[in-house]
Length: 187
Image (cartoon, one colour):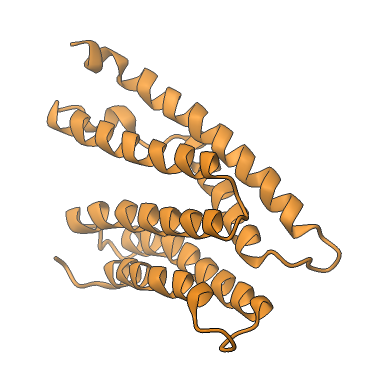
């Protein structure tokens, strides 16, 4: 495991996961609900920014590694899954939305691994629709964690709209990846 800045940022993102979750389960009186929302959102946003930053730095500093390529998507999926489970527990999103998003992540990860074993790892490379899904998902989760109105913006409504769009894009991207892999799947 190469110890470089991109990989350290990925590990930092993983370490933020219990912090984001734990904020909502601290003993009563430690934080007000508004403070918990703000802190969890700030931690999640910092973690989401490290997702972009670690990839950028790995390419820019020529510090890409097989371990980093493995760990980065694992960190992303853990972060999103943990946040969605908390949001379901807080009744801020529906369990069906969480199941769609988490289920797709598991299915596509398995598909990518299978395709790599079949000698065709590039067959399910990240697409534009997958990147758009991720952007909607990260913004939606941030809004749903924050939950409070912000400068007159209906944060809850915007979060619900975006998480539903993210779930729709999740399904579309899953079918896109399955279509891309269909020939190999038939063999």
